[in-house]
Image 1: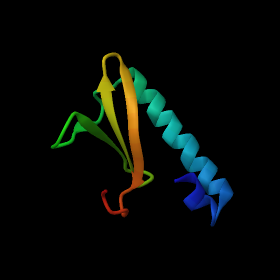
Image 2: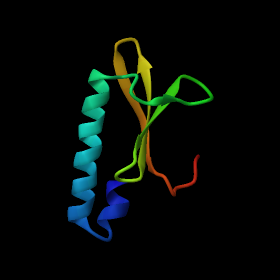
Image 3: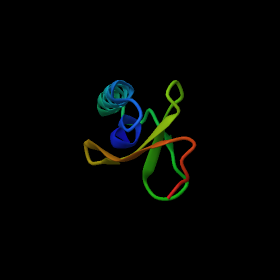
Image 4: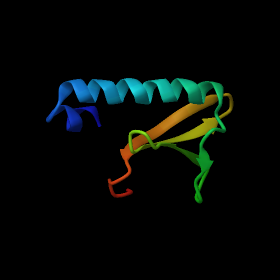
Length: 76
């Protein structure tokens, strides 16, 4: 994600990465903040102010980040 944005604007890529990291820190304290995904044990946290989605799983007492994607990006 950072590399893609940084091709156009490094400062913007840094700002986005910082915001995503902060949201991940919040998830570590409030792991059920995101909504469950239909398949599997994954959850999604929408970052509506930035149009990104953090996909993650709760494993035991840890939050595992599966991926981060822009809302306009096709789902894999």
